[in-house]
Amino acid sequence: MGTAILGGRGGAATAGGQRAAIAARVNRALLHPAAKPALFALCLLPLALLLAGALRGTLGANPAEALIRGSGDWTLRFLCIALAVTPLRQATGWHALARWRRMLGLFAFFYACMHFLAYAWLDMGLVLSDIVRDVGKRPFVLAGSAALLLLAALAATSFDAAVRALGGRRWRALHRAVYAAALLALLHFFWMRAGKNDFAEVGVYAAIVAALLGWRIGKNLIQSRVAAGN
Image (cartoon, rainbow, N blue to C red; front, side):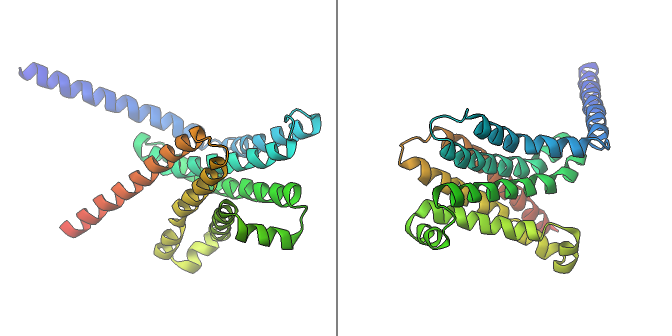
């Protein structure tokens, strides 16, 4: 029995050592000087493919809708990816992922801007009065605009100078608004698809955002209990 216990502990130690070794290798790869430029280029690839499709005429019968929808889809995807960085980092020990979180969040804002620009140009002809009227008239446009404004505030305060000016605690509290932006983006997507009675993709994104938000709430509850215990 003692041997079995020792064997079990030894196996657990070996597995833990293997995980630590894998994490170390991954962290070294993530910290490689070429890693960040490669990520930057990869993040621009969806936009490049959308523009190439528009130029080649391969976006289908309604290329304007494809550009608007495609840029919106990538906004939501980048939001999910940025929100997943911290849980993934803590679960795997890939701590070097933290250096990528800001870039991923800024790309979520970038694609949100591309989405709004495509809507304002291709749908509304860049007529400001029509855009303002449309925001007040259609709830899904209002939700998307609110998400964009939140992301703009987060992007503007994402730099080190803003962290120093606001202070760490206030900066972290402000940047938790990314979850509100994700929920507004999800609501925007839901209302947009409601007219077509197509909720399959909405359900996938909703499950991802719910899981990430649930992780954040659970972490905060644990930290509150630990603090109360102390």
